[in-house]
Length: 178
Length: 172
Image 1: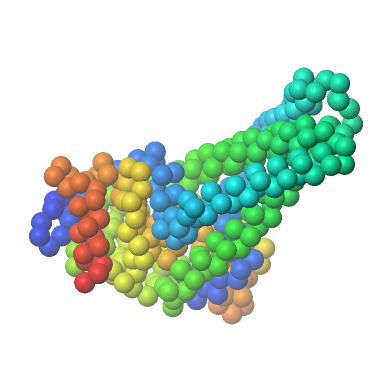
Image 2: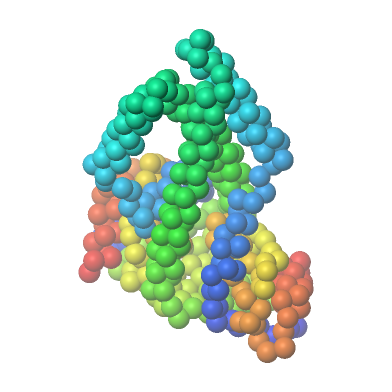
């Protein structure tokens, strides 16, 4: 199977660079669970901060200093930092464990055509009909295909010259939709 | 030469969730220690800052306020986390439902997954881990953990026997 782009098929050969894994996984995840709309998030935080203001006013009524609210926010801030740190270490560990998988795969050869996706590497062989591909999603530095809860990530670096990522996705979606 | 073991997975919720933890559970001890240090250091620092802002008022109420703030955020983030988790699992299960019927095939050549519209074959080198889960086994390939409940195994086969067989094939 040689790398190449024709009318009927796109064939790629590449080694998976695990550096794109975090971005690919978050793109994959967003294709299943779309993020909250910006307006929703803005309203949510506006309500939270308004609530804090009201709280500051309310405790003032009881003769307590509104500075107490700032003290409370500081305490919450510490928790935010601690949770963020835990999350970061957890994710780094996660990518390390998961990324080790690609030490085994060697060069990956993948073919997209009207029938579906055919992917082979040193240790596996995967065949998907287009009906199995639930989403083709853009991620930073990669294109992600989601099938059930599995992910196929194609790094942008694997695409040949003359095929940019969005054109690539358009062709995949063309096959998927037909 | 042993026969293939073919399994129709039932994906019990508990087993699947436990399996999903395989990739994140091994957080180093040092990270835990650092996280707790950050937490306590941060809270002590907050006390100091509060003292700086309102020196004449520094006292128990402010300490209580800092702690209350910290506790509220913890509660908030745990609640939100639990709700989001539940939502995410529901989406995952629904997504998987679309690929049923599923079957897992384990043999000397490797591990195969047959689903509607897709077919995957892994050599044993691709399998990263055969893990003990409560009431079953988790076969991990990269990010994905394929749960095999003891109840899904062929009659009279226990999870121990199943894992031993997989390890034999893997080692061969």
